[in-house]
Length: 258
Image (cartoon, rainbow, N blue to C red; front, side, top):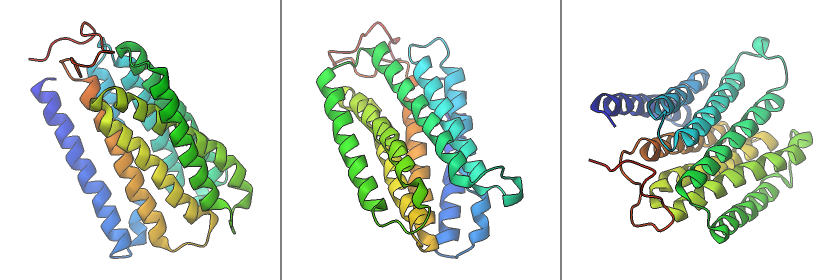
């Protein structure tokens, strides 16, 4: 990774550090709810970062992985922008638009993870089965507890189960990569936080929850997305082998780190 790219990524991370915490503080402590209109700036910075990582990594073994992360982040950003758009600009009910966008985003994330697994030989069937199975159980249990007594948007309860399964599958795929190789740990933590944020968001959507519940969901979600994007950058742009000691990695896949 060149020094100019390192500096650019550092500046983008600093921008994210400004946008997300400022909105959290404004929403939770100062009750400046009008600042919610600027939540999308956090995901916009991360979207730009993800595409920069992909562009910088073209020709590298994990280019496909970076593309999946960038595509997923883009769809998430579009969902965020639609969610905060003025009502006059919306062409359909908010959840009926953002849920499909996020769902397609998770398909892209999973596709990126499968690309990484194929390129680096991270294919232990037991690891993938256990990781996916555990997260699916966690996700379905969380969905049931969060929606069983829903008082609002009841019609979205069952569609949200399908979305939860996709979220849990993303967390499972990222966890499987991290179990194979610890350099994917930040990515896996990001996937877990994304699922956690959705559980908190479900409380906001299905119940008459206080405003701070939505702000909490946004803060967890934004942190999860940051970990996914910068965690992916750490692996996709690394010049050296992510783990030369791990038996499933092909040392010839990635040039030696200086």
